[in-house]
Length: 634
Image (cartoon, rainbow, N blue to C red; front, side, top):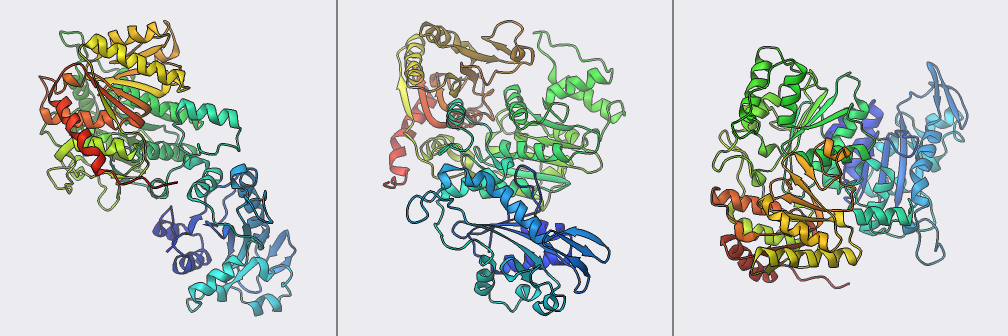
């Protein structure tokens, strides 16, 4: 069966007339697995929405417009317009043709989607076609009305083509007859991704590294051979199939949860007519800043989508509703527990409004307390649009052994409306395998019950890269100098500084490294618990307590603050300080797993002494080569 990124059931429910449903059922019954079918989705610069777009990696791209008009309902017709008994309509064949041209326009300009050899060398490698589907008419009906030239067989399907008695192979042959003839070259997997990237901008991965952005700008809009990153079809299906009401996505580290959240926030913002903003909540500030940065890249403003940490939202609610904030703790830090309690009380008393947002989306919900999720579940308006993204294996902020109850116990009614993302796309097979070895039994699968949340075991998407390695140094000073030297080599080789992150357990370990980097002329920007150091006073990033993602500087973060982020090159320093004395050992292994899975290309670990974490990593590295599949040649 073909792939339906919006899911068959949702498309079936969304079909506007019986004719569309007939076409949908026939496509499901007859099309092969390698086909992808979209329904009523905007395509091209004019964002027109054809009834169906069908893509086959060898046959090409086909656009269909469906009309369920009765025989005899057409009073007058030409190839541009149809006059019906009850009104006028553009010719469906013309509509489909125009949409096909819109969809094909960027594809035909893409140098990587050209025929490489043969008589059609240099021509577009993607055939295309268009057609009208007259779902209530037969060939006799068309002939009786004298409409053979208006609805030619070369671009028209009729009711008999949709019959259950038509063999699937015969239907497919009839369907492909609407496409260009004369050439067929099967597209590679990468070329298929390019087609989706060009037709549907919303599935593009926007969190490119600085090196990728530079390559895109240098190559031009339609010449970016290896840098078109898109959601895979599973991710696209998870994103497009989200409906109203409460929804939960369980996704392993690197499975694209945040990418789906950004897609969903953009989709909702562009269709929001409620007059209320959309709210995105997460736990830490760097992730909130990153999400806001990605939404801005898609043209979404803070007025449309408010992105905040949960505690930041609580503070804002108290300010806006005139409720006094709790006193700070004796050490000068905010009393976060009292802050949350004050907001909860304000909601219960009606001082803080419920249902104030058109939608609420929660990233990294596994770091939330149960009370926070209960509060968040009361924030969407009557449409009850709530999306929760979750991975129990990454819950690094809740105390060891303190598990969340089931979603239903927290007011999140998502039974039968949850999805699972098992594949890790972020990390290479080498990085993921090492991370899983170090995590040990933390990743053992567990089903959801009334007393605990589920845990999902990750699988690798199979991307390969260099083996991670462990660097040993005698002292912290030597470690800082050694890491700075390696970072300098990367920068000298052309890696942008902002594609490099250094993570550590405690922020006090940064000073030696910052000095060593500065000696080599490399800027470093450190995120320090709500403030940003390393920038000139008054910068926009400092005012917003966010890292400047575009600044050409190495990013320094604690392992906790790096949660939800990713970088091509990650250095994980001072492993000898793990596990921290005051922390539960299980929590430290969970934290190590989260930190290691921040790297997309290369992971380097280092230490200035021995510890249980160093031993665990060393043993895992020794086992790693024997656990990896052999690399395929070519």
